[in-house]
Length: 382
Image 1 (cartoon, rainbow, N blue to C red):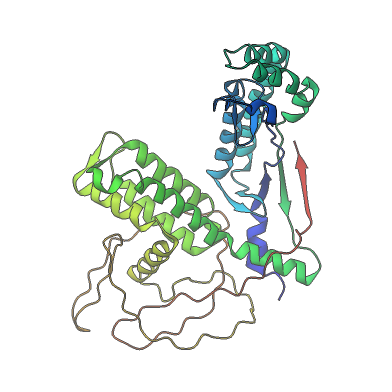
Image 2 (image 1 turned 90 degrees about the vertical axis):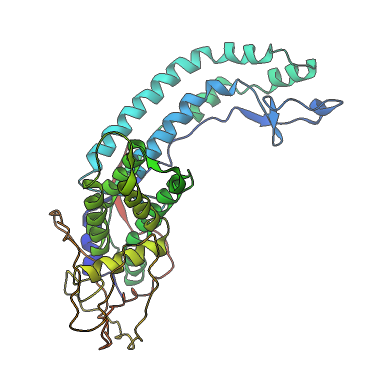
């Protein structure tokens, strides 16, 4: 099976951003045996079999810039092929941010190198307990030229296109099909970290927490073209956030709504269940509606027995009526925002059992092939 039409459309809307060219100098050298004779060096000088040859505080500004670069890409991109898949609508914003960080990095470097020898001397002359430690630092100091080469800020952004070889293009297609699941995994990781702060027992929520949820949803909105599931989840989060105040502490019933939302996003499984309930509540005939007609060699799934799932406190459950004539309470519809050139994932038809409670099952995506060598990609390096 070669790459599918909808997968190519997704590739047309993303760029691969790579940050592997950001290099930091560690300022560590192997710990020598003679340094350990009679006394163990303090932790600020040596640890894990290596010693520092300069005050580590001098290097923290470089480390901070690298973290900011990763955060800039992670906030709107999803991990893909060793880098990050970023929407073409966001790429210029990301590049501008990286360029600003690159300027800061080299400004720091231009100040660091002229002072390097003096800062090494200051580290040598610390009040170390043994003279051997001072001598070990002095003799192990890294030449300035090596430090210069070790401090670099680079990145690349390129478009990814399928290769003419069917096997290679099919492996790329498998990676593209996994983008939505990777996005859900990253969303769950962020939500789980929020819960680990004690959010569920605090009794209130601050705007800092809500801003994290807003950023989480902004990432989902920017990647809605990955699948209709992503769009449905983003619309639900946006509707929940719209009912909350934009300033001050949130408590009471609204606090409960926030905890319920974040809890339902805290694992990949709970996200899938939430999406399923949202589709049922919105009257969807299928868990995922196809957007593009593509002929896929997928056998129809065997009929499924209806599954009755327990409604957990962290979900927004949809209760079925006791009889066919009983009224069904419909939730307030969610207004979906227009997305530029959406392209949704194609799923197999779902067999629905003619029971009083028709719960459509999400069709399993085509089996993914283990990634092979990267497809051809043309891009630009900075």
